[in-house]
Length: 131
Image 1 (cartoon, helix red, strand yellow):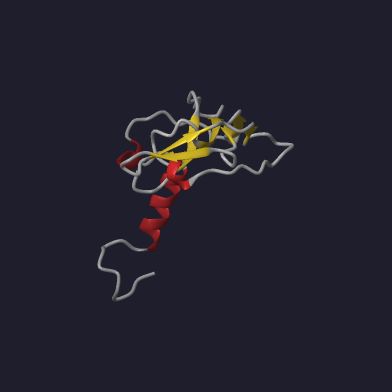
Image 2 (cartoon, one colour):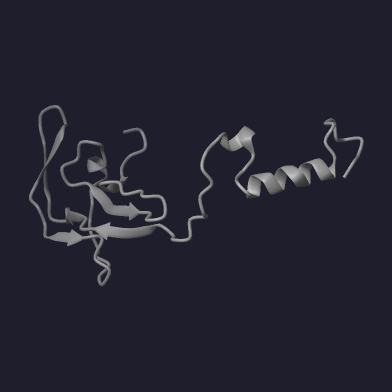
């Protein structure tokens, strides 16, 4: 639609033609000489991989002379990816850092057969934002 706000030389017919070209995957300015492929009809598949974390509720915490704490003990493991059970896990905030040996994390893989995407694995890890 033409209006005083349209500062281009394009009108509705120009934009319609461009939209049809883009939808057909043929607009050379966007897609170059790429081969036209059918639309991806298969959605990506998300699969959880075992994600073990040990309960820290019973940890013994010891402070050294410089007030640096150390955790001792290891509670029972829980699999956060278990589809049949939502475990209660206690986690000390002081251990939510990048080098934690007992990370609170979910491991999963994503495959997309339509485009051949198969990364080895992806990790979503909870930690303190500055670390």
